[in-house]
Amino acid sequence: MKTIQFIKKIMLFSALAFCSTLILSSCTKSDGNGSSASFNLSGTATGGQMVPKVTTNGSATISGTYDPYSNVITYTVAWSNMTGTPNSGALYIGTPGSNNNVTGVGQAWIMSPITPSSSTSGSYIGWLTLSNDQATQLSAGNMFFMMGTVANPNGEIRGQMFINR
Image 1 (cartoon, one colour):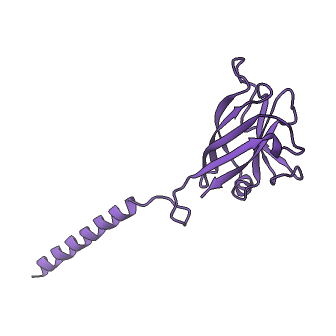
Image 2: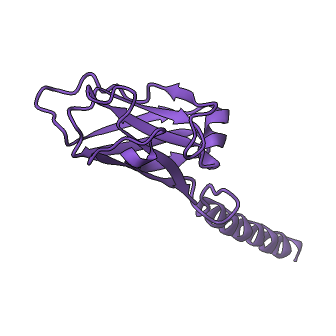
Image 3: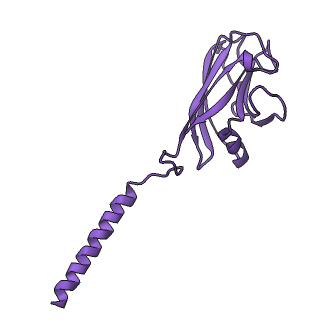
């Protein structure tokens, strides 16, 4: 009789262990709000967002993902109608419409390797690991990207970057 009870206990424990394993293995890392680990990254740049404003038909978009667990952003920048081939591009920390306390995140992408076949329209794909402070600034909407050309060396277009949770 004790042997049968012992076998039933082992079978019950095994079934519980198996179900627990199934439940836990189906879980994904989350930010606590039920969303997946990565967020969409987006932004649109124009001359009107430059400080001071720049008159240009140039524009660009940035799209990609932000992983808050590794602080890695992966992105694609696509530009069009610039006054010339972009010769600079970087990410900066700063509030919208302000040049106060603007600090560079670092040369996120280097525009100089653009081939001579590049022109006033094109794209660039890259990735960057942010510091914790930079990630906090991105999450708060205080990061922007800017691109310059020979005609506008201090920047032709600028766009605030946002993460969509």
